Amino acid sequence: LQETNAMLCDQLNATQMVQITGPRGMPVYATGSFKDGRRVGGGLWGVDLAMVSNDGDDNSKSKKVNLSALEDIEIRLGGVLYASSRSHEVKAQMTNSKDYDGDKRKEVQCHFGGPVTGVRLPVRVSGWPKSHWSNVQRRDFSRRDNAYRPNLDVYGLLLEEVRETYPRAQASFHRVSFFGNCVEGMVTNLIDNNNNFQPNDGNKREEEKEEELWNIANLIVATLREAGCEDVGEPFMKRVNDVQMAAYVMLSVNNETNEGVEAEVGNLVRFQLESRSTADFLSQVGMRYDISKLVGN
Image 1 (cartoon, rainbow, N blue to C red):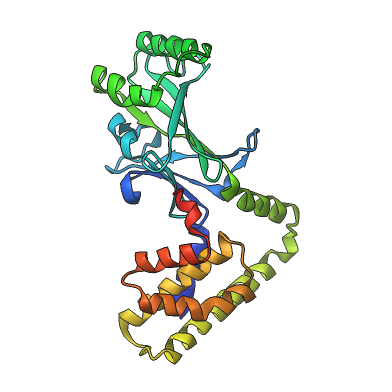
Image 2: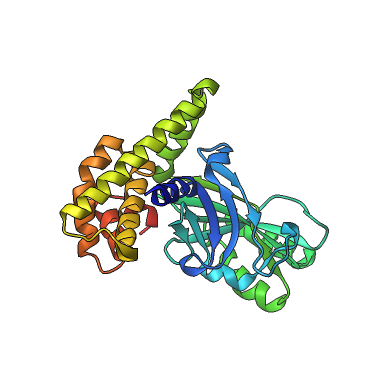
């Protein structure tokens, strides 16, 4: 149980992880931490990102992805799909910014969905010559200033015109901003926790949290035993891990109390025993407790 409880603590920390990824969470292109974010105006919660190497290169400044990756880009919060180019309408526009790096680096502001789950993701493009970038910027501004003409599809232009004309052009991600109903509770909790933080109470609160998680883990094990599960081997631990993961999501995303989660352990165990896989189980939990809204459907 100590290993399982330690795993749950890791999952609690992982809930704050922000990832920019390919389809179904792989590969990971960039990461950041939601809890290290900040208010950036307009109701946005901004998070700095660091590009991730998938080829052993440790220099984050040199890490980039092909523009084709934008076709299936995903933004994940705590490992859960929050927004994507497949599940959300993506609107992009050129920025008013001047050159970032001579002729070599420009940014496009991409807007995913909203108001329930919304993201603004600036895409920095390297290898996009200033002449063409400026031409697209003029076209975009001209369309947006004309109420009788549809806006320029800048996102589609990146995927087609820019990619085909400049095949060596690449993208990178250095910050992301969240908005929408789904993150407001998380932001409020973070701000309240920071405002109420007392240095002398830090260790005590950590001890209390570990004890709470331990109590939930013990309750899960006892409930599985009562349901007739033999408490040996990997299959049993998998069931425990599944239910702990669901309990963690309820605590961190739905802001349930420990007492509230403990009261639902019996239902969580039943869902797990009836499910075909971990994904099926978490899907049932999401539907039952309204956590599926984070998926952005």
